Structures are given as structure tokens and as C-alpha cells.
Length: 390
Image (cartoon, one colour):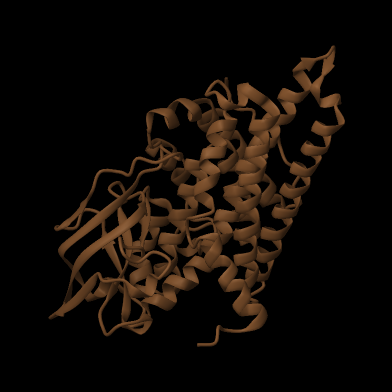
């Protein structure tokens, strides 16, 4: 059965340009993404052609400078684009968020020369990016990464393995964090590594519970040589770049979560108003009506939360605490709402004939990626009560 995820959400958008942009995104979502979503996810097909279309439509560089092919859009608008795409298919919404995350280091910390050389192709030239921080033995403890970059004349030689890389094996470029100095966060530097670099290979994609259309794989760097002109920021600045990117990236995950939850609510409401038991629609029964009301309330609260954080970011104000809160709340909401949607549909919700079981499986990963929700609680607590005592 086709997804009913695309019932439009009433949005308060800051400009006519933003309203036109959302209209374009909804058209692409309705006509190009949603019709194939269930079939392609089941087959594990990554829709590269959709990302080519998004690039041609100016949607892969929305929050970045138009001088380099970006869209000059505030995060308040960009995140709502992600939500719309995620409601149609999470693989696409998440893919856009990851591409934006991968582009962040160059767009924010790159030199003018680096940006002129590389950003136009990354933002509007059809390239697709990946962000390579995690490793097999360093996930939440990212500062303990072991991948090493050694200086060799005007080049760096990078050796190591990165893990849990979205778009691993298909990305055209990777923003790679590697150790150039001593232990700890101050010994890490960021590099822009081409996807076709000699010595860079990818393992077979992980076999996942959900989000099967989005490849997640280890990448191996076996003496990958990159020029110093592809170093992003200063030596030793890489971990700061990584964390700064994640503050913004967590808002993208929050928007993905709300899009997915909205899709699940739409399915649940449609089913509840059509399904009859005891001679009337099950939506007439108070217990179920209250469940749907709670789902809608949680979604609206999450949307308000991520937009409030986005507006702080757009105003140039600190937003790391609010980003962690939004990621935590929105992804927990997605898990709760998708689980409740399965319950509303009963036995049918547990079958692949309806998309809510897929939504529930997909929601789980959002509580894990870009900092588990336990890490988000640690971040929030540090803002509230200060750092831990040793």
C-alpha cells in the first residue's frame, strides 16, 4: 500500500521564496520519492538519481553561500525541507542531512581558495558527501580515534578504518578526522578526501534492521595520500570542527525524526478513520482518539523545539544545548509515535502491507546516530549543572 505521508503540514515560513521552496520539495516528494519508497527500501536500493535531482534543483546546498552554489537559506527553512523529504522517505531526508554535515567543514573552516575549488561541485554539481568520524573502537568516545595522518612533504598519508559511515562506498568525498598529533581531541585534524582516492576502499554495507536503502559501511584508508591543500582548518583543530558540525547535524536528525513521525501519524489517522469495528470507525473510540491526540502533540512540540534551536543558530547565538535537546526529544518522539502507529493499525501494522512497521524500524536508528540519546543527555547536563567532577 502506498505511503500516505505527504499530507501537507501548515508551516510558518519567513519569505515567499521559502514558501516556493517548500512547494517544490513537496512536488518532488509526492511525485518522485514517495511512490517508490517502500519497494526500494525493501530492496535496499539507494536512490542516487533522487540526489542528482535534488542537486539540480538547488537543494543539496541550501544553508550555504550562494557564491559557491548554495541556497543562502536559514536553518529554519533548510530543516523544514529535510522534514518534508524524510516524511516521504527517511533515506532521502537523512541523506541530505549527512551531505550537509559532510560539507560543513569546508564551508565553515576552509580557506577561500579551497571553497572556490571544491564547494561548487559539492553544493550543486551532483557530488554526494560522507562524514567520517566514528571508528570500530571509538563511537561515543570519538576523541579516542586511531586513524592516523602522517606528514610527507606537501602531502598527508592517512591510514585507518572508519565505521558506521552513511554513504560509505558511494560518496564522492569524505570529511575525515585523523590523528596528526598526540592522544586526545587536540591531536586530531580534518581532511577532505576524494571518494576515488587510491587506497580508499569500502567494506560491504552493514545489514541493518531498517533504513536499508541508505548504505552504512566501514571505509578503509590504506596509505591514502592527500595534499596539504585538502587539510581543513589548522592542525589539531579537527575535533573542534567535528563537534561544531555535529551541533548543526543534530538539528538535521531532529527534523528527520519529526518528518518520520508525521508520516506515521498520517497513516494512523487515515487507517483509524477508515477501519470500522462494532459498526463505527475506530477513530470514534476515546482511547484511540487520545492516543492520536498525544502523537500529534508530541510531533508539534518536537517541531517547535528544533525550529527554536534553528532560529538561535540563524541569529548567531549559542544553540548547542538546544540542538542536543531537540535531537533527544524529537528522536524519542519518533520512536514513540511510530510504535503507537503500529498499535493503532493492530495486526495490519505489523505487516509490510502498511508502512508503519518500516517507520518503527527506521525510527530506532535516529536515537543512535550523531550522538546516542545518552550522549545528548550528557551534553545537556553539562550545560545545566556543569562538567562532571573526577
